[in-house]
Image (cartoon, rainbow, N blue to C red; front, side, top):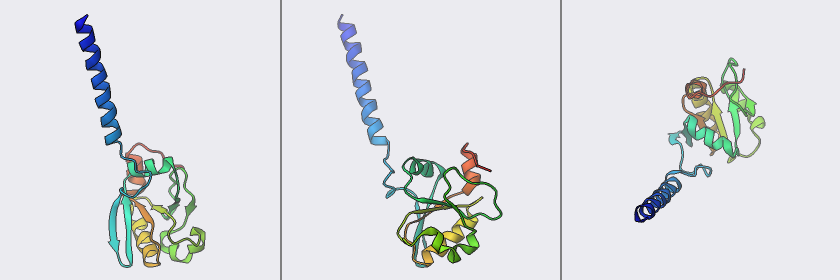
Length: 147
């Protein structure tokens, strides 16, 4: 009987510890204040984010997702706009007038989206995010591209 009580207490203690670890280790990045890597550029900065960070952000999507790759090679799910990276400055009206609104950019490898991010920051946009590695990283993480 005593062994059964000890076993039950041990199981309860382990469950309690795992619950504590789960609540401490699961970072709530829905606020997005502590995610991404800040990239400083002329006029401000933008953030590079990983595929896993973007996937979490997409759970409570509060941003405009923009494909800036040319030529077209597909979209990530839930893409809102396609604007060629080299015409982003001429297409600000498509992004809306809010320069503090969250915009996530991506392209095939992240070269074009980096250029677009730098351009938007230079134009006064302050909430720009870039998918590090682009669609290549997205596919390598096992995610699909919509053709």
